[in-house]
Amino acid sequence: MSVQSVDRALDVLEALSEHGGQAGLSEIAARTGLPYGTIHRLLQTLLARGYVRQESDRRYALGGALVRIGGVAERMLAVWAEPYLARLVELSGETANLAVLEGDYVVYVAQVPSPRRLRMFAEVGRRVLPHSTAVGKALLAGRDDAAAVFRRTGLPRRTDRTITELGDLLEELDRVRARGYALDLGEEENGVHCMAVPVHDGGRAFAAMSVSGPAERIDAIDREELAAMLRKVAEDFGTAVFHS
Image (cartoon, rainbow, N blue to C red):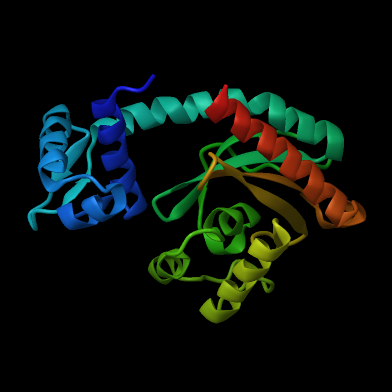
């Protein structure tokens, strides 16, 4: 049984998040369907608690109090993900990762390494640009603002395989959506290949799961079988986090 005021306050926060963390009253109203007066009252409470702040142009933005909660939630996400990543390692023999978007950057929040002597490491906490990574592509493929993100970050060349033209990268995101998984074929680091899928909360992709390893070993795994494994584990994880 939900409490209406709590539901509505969460709707407002989600509306701000979906507008890139900042929105005006009209944009919040369009997203939530709530009356202006109701939105204004909710915002005043959220402002007082630090979950929202008001900018100089009178637009509203997500507030600093969410950083504290978000940091704890991110650590818990890593704990919850570990058995699912371990399952991926068991199935594939390669290193498994969990990553999220923070602003325009991809951040690795959890990893279970391969038991093999030669294995890949993406240090937990590492921040990378999304255009050259499978997890970045998986996270952005379903977003309408992907092009805007890439324009802000630029598309610097990491290897000779990095996609550095915006049009080519957007076409690659079309392919990611069509096949249901993203690839990094040596685009971030020479000799390293990676496959990633989004983890959904029932709607949006809130994280991405990946398997990475030396190119020759990743390429030796049947690509569709690997994608099916990834999707199943990611689906199980998303269900466990949001519907348990």
